[in-house]
Length: 477
Ligand code: BGC
Image (cartoon, rainbow, N blue to C red; front, side, top):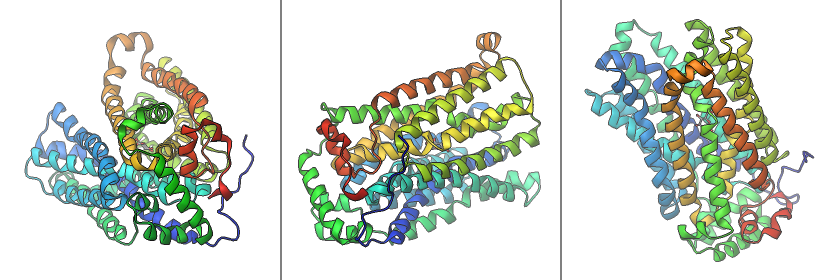
């Protein structure tokens, strides 16, 4: 099952690896901003609370308001990108990041701050689906998994970078200075990557698939020449044109037999990526560590260790996703996450406070990072038909953000519920997320098709004509 597969495009056909990588890196800046903007709040919220003298509910809203924007952004980015293009949609997300960065640094009232954060959230929601979508549509098939996984690396990188930026800014002045000004710089610092993103976007083209859909074949051809080589470009152009002719282009099509399976799978994976608990660790790690017996400083340090693990193991996915395939990674990854959660749940249940409990947390993060984190984005960026890919990804991503919101909002309630604490100590949430991992193993085993090495057109046809799923791509494009 895990035999190495060729990961390079067709021999004898010149293409520019550097060009594809450059486009990938530009689009992945959207992922970096996604990570940066979701995590910036963690270092700023305490100072912000003091500055505006917020009560508990207001603090929660100041922190979570961006997630509401994410749901909105994910909801309309697809339609926008199907109509106006992937590049224009990415540009809009970049501008929203920039406006939000500047405005959330200078608000006079909480209402202004929350509005600025919701605008940033819309940017995150948009970029969360547009970056993988763009990368997927410009990638040669044989390295598509790897290139889309770079986006996950950028998300995690963005989270880590902002931890350090927050830490550095907080160190620049006293507590009073941080309450008055420090938090403003934390949010404002995002203007730098956001401006870079906008400028870099101006240098990249539309995706060839979207261009063919718009009837702009010459432009599509010249980009394909560079991404997969002139010989392959012609074959690919033909395949894209033929496959597009099979599509009606309406969302209703996604609910027809055949493609309905793809839609259900995309939605299931998106929700499962969240309800297996990742963001409980991303958002509450220091609290969890304190519950397991760590002091404040070591809890913060362990949180950084989590970030480093997350980054390192994403690199494993990058190396393996096109060789081993999506399915084995998802299977072993979700099983590993489930086992780690059971261990963690048991430790919390028995009130164990020993340092080795960290192993379960790191095991969970490592398994997530090499599988469910990147690979879910890879799969949902490649299983939908071109004409409605944006809208279909929107549905899946909107539900992903909704699930994120529900899980991160309910964790403290479940964790502190008196009845659950009496019966499970603090183990219940972890047991619950472990049960979702078991469901994920089933879903993956039963319904994830192996898409490594197949062109987007081959994947699309395989839903409509299931007999074709086993066919190999022409030369791993
Ligand atoms: C998920 C995010 C998560 C991030 C952490 C992404 O794949 O969609 O919800 O915060 O990974 O690594």
